[in-house]
Image (cartoon, rainbow over all chains, first blue to last red; front, side, top):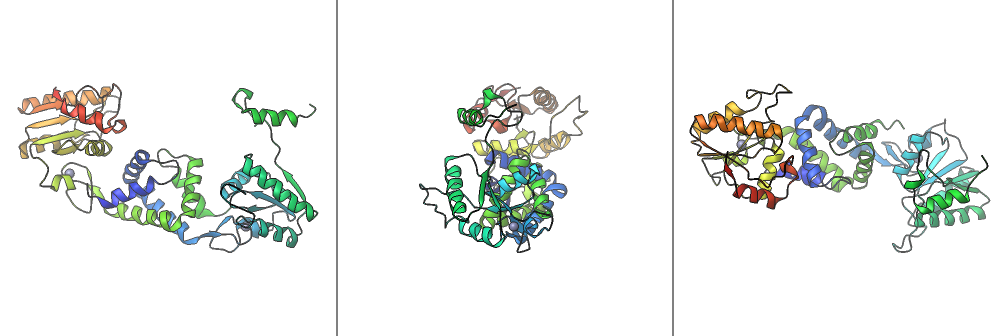
Length: 198
Length: 198
Ligand SMILES: [Zn+2]
Ligand SMILES: [Zn+2]
């Protein structure tokens, strides 16, 4: 087939995380069948987001056509609390939980000796600026429970300590509904060490 | 977040087969990071395919802005042989194997008593028209090895017999319950070469 647009479309779709050539072909055929309901709206919305999406100048969340994201510009969010996350997906996960009422700071990754990623490559200097200018009392380090995530958390906690600002991190333990048999040893160890009186 | 375009985009992406909410979010974040390389080309190509894709008037393959698909209009394909497939994904699977040199006919499904799909709901009358007008010697029934697929193959073979046209089917080697689109090229090639009279 020299249907080059169709081949291009499948090739591009196959580059999305979670899709491969086969699922890209299935998705494209599905979209052609649902042209008005799915394919055209997807094309339009992609174009719209590609045009308007930008990085919040304050926290690096994604925002739409504005300098500050909805969270940074909302008067309903608490001042003085910043939750530090590795990336926007983690910010979204926190927001879905709906329990944190302060503001965020997206680092854009973790410190990594192997990949030569130091504090300057992340948005740690910007975080320290915000801690001073926004009169922050507490920084919650919601970083992934990986070695690099925890190294990063410790580094930031040290920086905050010299500035007299409290650093906390999410508790580690058994997830709600989690079955012990399915958990890794590290999680069980952490949960045991952090055990509480019933 | 009232980033409605972003939420819309995630919601639409999550409707694609093989994607759910989580993989849609990951895909959208990935695209925003690769805006020029991935998101804009995807939007453009989707728009292009949505505008130009249509059904081949002869075989119901997908074609781009023309009445006949590349296969139907190619002078390099053999006349007199038609390979009947259930849908376009199966046609693509046959083409990837690269061994069939004739032309195709996409039925658009299989006969199904349960779903009240009879010959008129598929493109079986059109197939019989083509068998006559294209002077077809052999019809290869490359239908899935499901009950409905085999019922459909037997029905078409019967219709062809009354017209004195040979009907063959892909050889065993297609696993029972297996769908063409899941098979590797070598299996399809072997099954085509060992095809037998129905
Ligand atoms: Zn922000
Ligand atoms: Zn055609």
